[in-house]
Every structure is written in C-alpha cells, then in structure tokens.
Image (tube, rainbow, N blue to C red; front, side, top):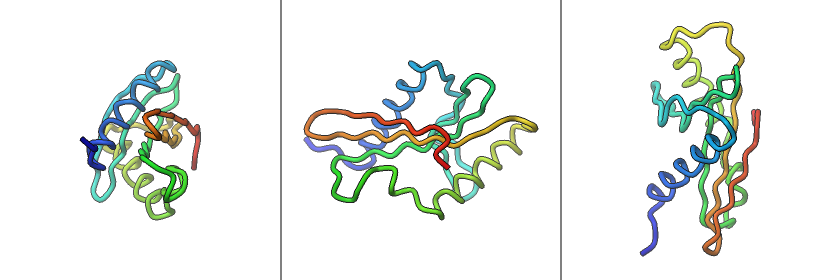
Length: 118
C-alpha cells in the first residue's frame, strides 16, 4: 500500500526528530502553529533555539526537497518563529532555521540536515 503525502510527511517528521535527538538536540515542540504558519519541529541545540522545517519526498521529479522552500514559506516560518518567541516570552536568545530533508527513494531512506539554512 502506498503512503499518502500526509502519511509520508508525518513519518518524515518523526524520522527527522529521531535524527536530531541522536545528534543531541532536545525536541521542544512539534507542529507549532501561529496564525498562518507552522513550524514542524522546534528544538534546542546547546544554547541555540532551532526552528526546523522538514521536507519529505518520494522522488526527485520536482527537484531536491529543500528547493521547495520558497521566500513566501521562509516568511511564514519567520513569522511563526516570532510568534513562538512572543508566546513563550523568550528574549535575547540565539535562534536559527534548519532544514531536514527526508527522501524515500527505492526503499531507502536518506536524511540530509542543513544547519542555518536561511
């Protein structure tokens, strides 16, 4: 049975979270929503707060997963991150945006992590 895009996305987010935890990150939030934006994962890497966008793909027909993050999407992620900082009353904290690409190609899962992606 083939996975739906939503199922693949959920599995990709879980694999990304496991990958980051294995690298020593602490996952603070999953699927955080603020107004029109959503952040897949919010993590802590040492003293840095990391907002993580996870992109999952089953083929390279539309290019690399990371290439699907447009300027509009970046803006929504930044807005959601600002909302998170405001809601949690977080100030003077170093933050960054990472991207984790999860590819399901020919029965093999590949994970690529781009630190400070934008």
